[in-house]
Amino acid sequence: MRIADKNVTRAVLERHGFTFKKSFGQNFLTDTNILQKIVDTAEIDQNVNVIEIGPGIGALTEFLAENAAEVMAFEIDDRLIPILADTLGRFDNVTVVNQDILKTDLQTQIKNFKNPDLPIKVVANLPYYITTPILMHLIESKIPFSEFVVMMQREVADRISAEPNTKAYGSLSIAVQYYMTAKVAFIVPRTVFVPAPNVDSAILKMTRLDAPAVAVQDEDFFFKVAKASFVHRRKTLWNNLTSHFGKTEEIKTKLEQALQTADIKPSIRGEALSIADFARLADSLKTVGLK
Ligand code: SAM
Image 1 (spheres, rainbow, N blue to C red):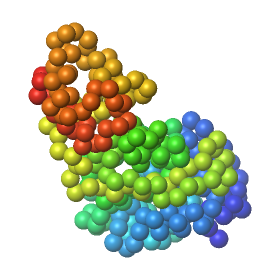
Image 2 (image 1 turned 90 degrees about the horizontal axis):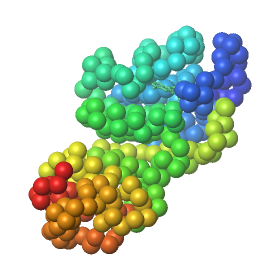
Image 3 (image 1 turned 180 degrees about the vertical axis):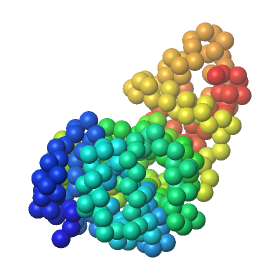
């Protein structure tokens, strides 16, 4: 019997008198087929260390521990720590850290892996209220994670993996695809969780690129330009750029010049621009002195 079996989950929750905390995004998985599919998608084996965020009562952790070299799981809710000691006590390759992942110094933590030289993958059923901050925290930690295989709201997974000229494409797609390839592996119905969330979920597989997808002069400025181009999605790129940089004649002349250099029409919408287009645009804007 697995922790994720509905009867086992119910018994564990009852035994510990656990009540769900909505503010922590607690929706526990109770489907062993899906858990196996997550482990298969992440290609976890004895040569991989895993970081898990939010183990809950250990449903996914159990599958990870059986397959990976080692698992380090970060859980914010201290009420779950004794429960995890109960459900996962038999594993000697699992460490549960009672910390908010957003406040964790990951560079220091990963030194605690018994074999810190193994590739590290992040595998998790993420708390939905902070999916994007967690992903950005992990990406920006500069730890060379080889892969993220994480469950999130389907709508967010679609946005992250979106291609140009689609409704879902936006600054989040660019923020992630600058560093990683992103692909929806499979969809998970809301019915397999307790309690059931209001939306369906998706497993998103993100693989780190050897180098960023495009070369830019100034990363922060590149992300700023991408963000500004999507502020009013229905407006043209020109309107979004003038809203952001200003509408004086001097600025407009500089904008025209930069767009011409980047070979981008002012009348298109931000969603038509690829990451490479945004890189050219940001570099040209910087060259004409816009900030
Ligand atoms: N992995 C379990 C499963 O699949 O059944 C639970 C997943 S549940 C969607 C999210 C988990 O993340 C909860 O256990 C919650 O307490 C935890 N959590 C929420 N915010 C967190 C944070 N900032 N840092 C670490 N864990 C967090």
